[in-house]
Image (cartoon, rainbow, N blue to C red; front, side):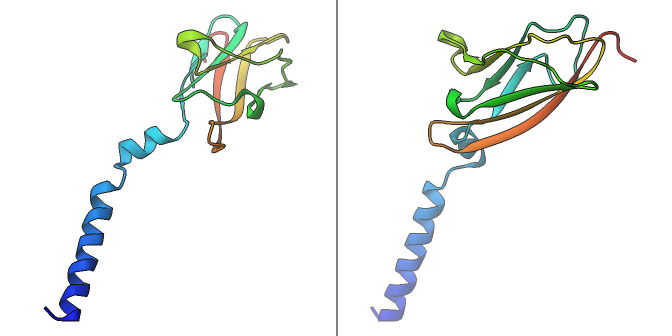
Length: 132
């Protein structure tokens, strides 16, 4: 067998192995932390202001690297000390809302990271009071 044929066969083998072991798109998504849900939910209308914001993730977020802010038309809404849920809720950040939230639109901005340090951030909105 010639050297050129051996090199071609080796290159083809390496390429096949790389394709066979590469993560699929759904596997790759499972490898990184992502927001999976919230209460209040994105774009929802709630009758009463929430006492606690609940942000659920696909993995346990790093509490020390997490930040959540709540903003309305009058500016920032005061929140209490953020905690991590326990048991089945261990992937949920809990943020007590201590400030007033009159009828209106609100934005939640969040930043967190998984145990591997991969940081992600995002925003979503919801409305308190009757929809228009």
